[in-house]
Length: 130
Length: 175
Image 1 (tube, each protein chain N blue to C red):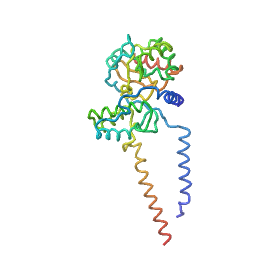
Image 2 (cartoon, chains in turn brown, purple):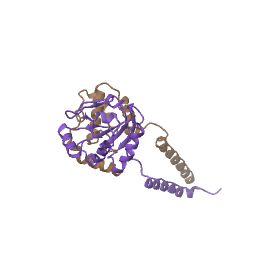
Image 3 (cartoon, rainbow over the protein chains, first blue to last red):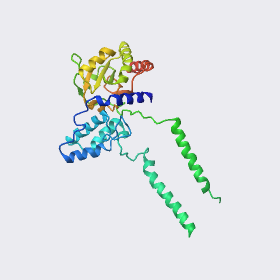
Image 4 (cartoon, rainbow over the protein chains, first blue to last red):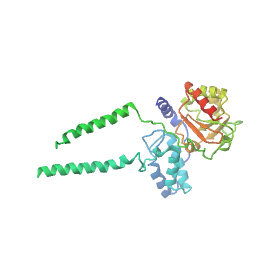
């Protein structure tokens, strides 16, 4: 944890002094491709500033990740393939679109379960009032 | 049958308390681990960054015996703290190659003059493309590569003085 804090501090101190990749902050000429890239970037996590997507983050590394996404979209790669490539490197963690898996099923089922409990409670209290 | 409902909020509260307490005593691991550990290196080629020092590629990392691949940068402060440990590893016979992230020849040469030079090869990764393909999320990071070009371990963050013996043991185990 201390290492990470030190690394983050160092990065935050120096992040602005380096030149990010060419496509980091330059939109693609083709607006449909750019929109595709933009939609993908909004659902990819920046590995430096872990609470932000690479579309939102000012970290130089996020810029390099945006450049990677734009470059691959420009060369005609599908967004799903790029996401799969990144998951192969960093794990599901890199994606803000978590797949249904043993670790994430409580996330998907909890809202449904809570709604069901709420309906049951509401039914009980309405019945008493009658 | 007694009504169990009055106890329900208390039970709910105790469950929540247990969850929060568990998180307090065992904080989540925030380190981003590369998924390439145990897998072969991706195909890549990096040009040399400073004259007289070769660049590196998957081919140069394969069939040369186990070695370390250090991801570093001259602008990275923990890399300065790590430098003496890399020199100790070099003195122990561990071959070390490097990937310089977003760097320039002038800066790297100055960094090596000031902090020592443990590297056999230095590749120029100007836009972090190879770093991203390795699943590395920052500098410094070090990968242990075996003779077949497979990633055996990833060490995230700077190597501390008390990590060196373990690293040498990991490297020797692959020989």
